Length: 226
Ligand code: SF4
Image (cartoon, rainbow, N blue to C red):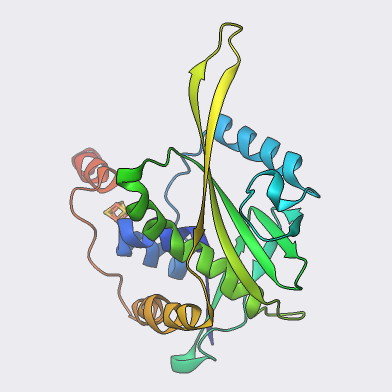
């Protein structure tokens, strides 16, 4: 049985950027070079340290009552399509923050170092939805341990706005709740996850995306290699 493991963030970024690179990563383990910035990871680390064990209302006042119980933990889902076609497909990734609500359900918060403006809000929420749904799917259908019922998914955006007189950076933040329920999660499985499954079942990778800087760079190098 072939076993493929996909990451929630690849469903939001790589899959839409280029299905060929997505396929190569999932099937052959070939990854694009990392471009993450140190400042991004530092802010991410500081934020996770600050919010853990705090009420969710400390950063998202409109959320229902609950506590942020952990950050940066790994989730791993069961085999989503039960080994059809000789392929097992799992979701694996590290969520940013998990919330335990007073009503016994759970929530997830994903931090984004990005500005949320009204004109781009719909597009950004659509873009990040698959990532949060993938984490939620893995929590509700874990490979090991008890399933958890997820009731809320949140995006928390942060972005530097200005420098104060004393050179302290002022950071603005925005929070948005994603639409989420059992039907939408099922639609995610029969829609995007099924589409991904069919892609990975192919013998050959799909065509590359057009005008990709990486591919153009590689093509321009070819004459210089024998
Ligand atoms: S176009 Fe090429 S390098 Fe770019 S993302 Fe796709 S396969 Fe990767």
